[in-house]
Image (tube, rainbow, N blue to C red; front, side):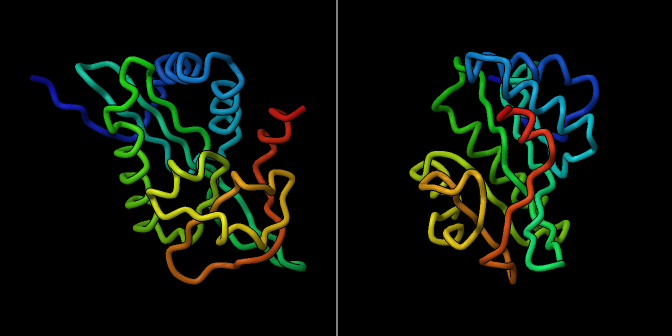
Amino acid sequence: MSMMSIRAATPRDREAIRLVEEHAFGQQAEAGLVDALVAGGEAVVELVAVEEGQVVGHVLFSRLYVRQGGEEFPAVALAPLAVAPSFHGTGIGGALVREAHIRLKNAGERLSVVLGDPAYYGRFGYSRERAAGFESEYQGEALQALAWGEAPATGGLVYAPAFSELAA
């Protein structure tokens, strides 16, 4: 019986990450987003789940800022989270998010934002109410936030440039 492990992504994982992202989402956009965020130096925490030597899951948290007036508060954006389709429902996605949250908190991060299914991300403490005061082109029911300690509840969300290129 093998054990799934979670570790930091390495440059040697790039192709495997791309394949997991493409298979999980059925398109190349998210894989391209990952490549652009990593190439742009925007990755804060990037983890992979490995089963029997194969990358089967991936999560990336990139730098995000909350702009209030002339000041910017550093935060992170969870995007994307992907698990190979044959491993859906096994808890790998949740394990990746939980491990990343531990690493982020230990690194002093205080705010994470995600655009996704409220029922899924709510399990990790993300809430629509926590994100309701932010100004964002992604503002809506799927925009959620999670704070560890003091963090702004209002202001404009400034994502890494790769997100704008994805939407273009």
